[in-house]
Amino acid sequence: MELTTNKKGDFTIAEINGRIDTTNYNEFETQIMDVIEKGEKNIILNCEGLNYISSSGLRVFLITQKKLMGLKGKLHLCNMQPAIKEIFDMSGFSSIFKIFNTEEEALE
Image: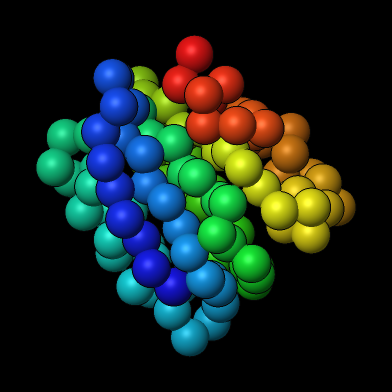
């Protein structure tokens, strides 16, 4: 799993590449919390390169959402692969998160 970030307007875009599973979800959580601790409260998780997510990874998404809501921030998800979108749909997470087809839509 690799996480790269860049700033666009009011949002920090975090691009996820690879897998988020039981072996690396702690690393992902640490990296995304570092972004928040640096003062970023509007985050887009670009999931275009995310090819697998376990329940541990989903938990980190929930923790991130809760943290940003407490800061009156926003978490948008975008560019999900069909298999990842299906996991979010089946788990009911699609109703919890704002999911956009493209990064451009998430920025609006």
